Length: 95
Image 1: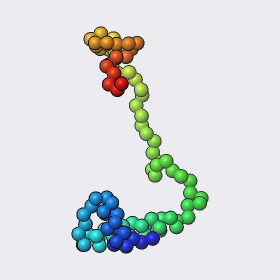
Image 2 (image 1 turned 135 degrees about the vertical axis):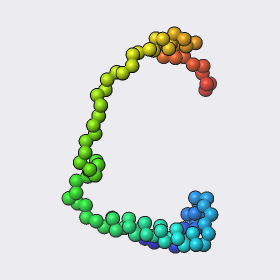
Image 3 (image 1 turned 90 degrees about the horizontal axis):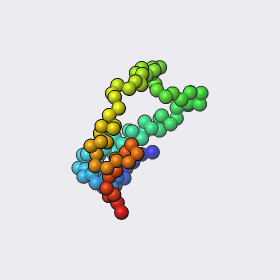
Image 4 (image 1 turned 30 degrees about the vertical axis):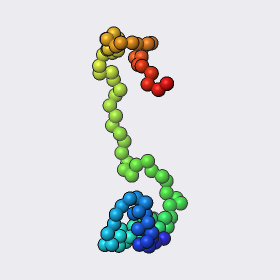
């Protein structure tokens, strides 16, 4: 697949881009190179290749999920104008 300069000009118009003649030529060439690369990648045989979650064989070092602060919700709710069952009540915004 290949794009003409007129097609790239139409794409630029839809994207609200203003391209000079030299930029139009350069962008047409660059987009066609990208499309050619995508076509080459589509031709690669990947039938017996197992999908990978990550290209490197690594594992995440995760920290333990420990509570590091004390629960102060009662203190914060005591100074709130209105509270419900463990939540804050706020005025209705949408009627």
